[in-house]
Image (cartoon, rainbow, N blue to C red; front, side):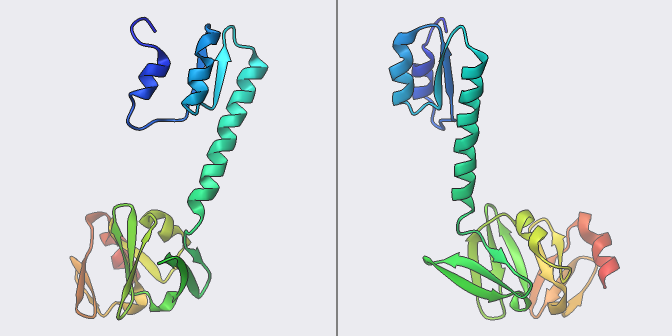
Length: 175
C-alpha cells in the first residue's frame, strides 16, 4: 500500500475482521502474527499455502460457530431449555403465550412471567410447531392462547398484539 502499511491500517480498525496478510516483504510477518492474523502469505503465493490459509480460516469460523451456539435454546416437542442466570431453565412450550422480538434478543412471555434470551426471532420461529404463528415482524403468538382478534390486532387475555400488514392473510386463514 503506497501510504499506509496493511498492518497499520488493520491496527486502526475498530471492528477487526479475521485477516490473512499477503505481501512480498518477509520483515512484516511478525507484525501480522502479533495482530492475530489467520496467516501471513509471502508473494509469489503458492496455491497449496493459500489453500492451507483458507482451511485455517474455515476452522476458526467453525469453532466460533460452535461457541456461539452454546447456551442457545433447545426446543423439544413439549418443552424448551433456555439459559438464564447461568443455568438452564425448563419452559413448557404449551405455557408460552407469545414471543416478542427485542432486536438481537427475544422475550418469551408466559402467563405470569417472561424470559429474555439472546436469540433471533426468525431462528426461534423455525423451531416452533404449528401452534405458533408469526403475526408481526416482532411477534409470534401461540394460537391456543388467543382470546380475541380483529383485522388489526390479536388479544391474549388483556394483551393486545398488533398484526403486521404482511401477516394479515396468514391470520385470516388460521382463525
